[in-house]
Picture 1 (cartoon, helix red, strand yellow):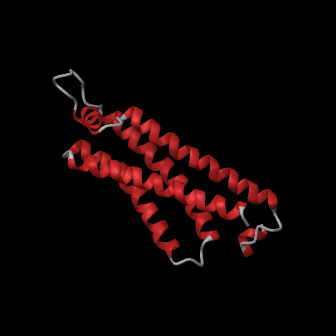
Picture 2: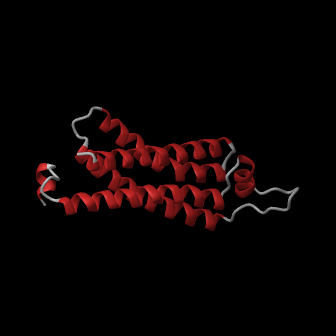
Length: 157
């Protein structure tokens, strides 16, 4: 509990190892989430468009709205839970740096924007599919970079 007050992990190697383990697990979660979305929605833009809007030439039906809503619901919950854990650890360890506030805000905005733009892309136009894929990949990349920074600081301390 001393870490919660003083930010010092020198007295508790167990807590330090626990935080490192959580960060490693979150790192692999973000990698597997990218693979899952690539499998469900598609890896290429043509696959994404076929999943969202269908393709009459190849007889591909568009994704059902209830399946998409379920996916968006799960994405919002899981990404925000993971981002809150990463952000709270990152803020605790890097509170003196000026970029901390910006990185955390950008991470939260990207993780919120990703599922919302996927729904908007399904309901409106293809341009939001480009916004979705960019916000999704940038958010996951930023979260993975922040977890690597946390692990690096805890292990090299």
